[in-house]
Image 1 (tube, one colour):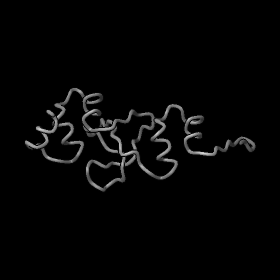
Image 2: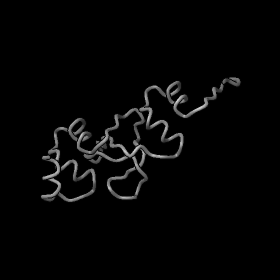
Image 3: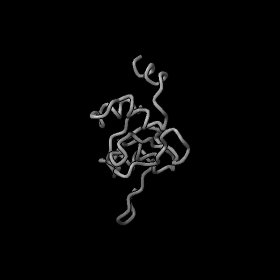
Image 4: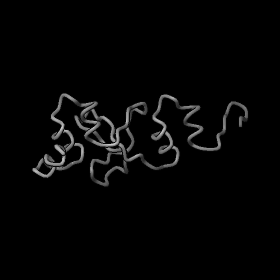
Length: 111
């Protein structure tokens, strides 16, 4: 539906698909509905992967990425290996999840 120069859509998904093609669809929908994707994105300024979840709730939650065209990943491990590959993956994942490096994390990463 269009009124003047403004287009209206039935769903956030439709709007995102038609108006914001360069933005990840899940991120666009989350921002439009006031939710988060709970996915990871490269935070180059802090040399880690940050999680798109409510800022300040722990576990690497940093809110929405500043660059809305950034790639999102299902896990810190995938984000680290794809976007911050110059770092040791175990260290990157530990930094991304705001946890220390311990035997449990190393064992989990190897499995």
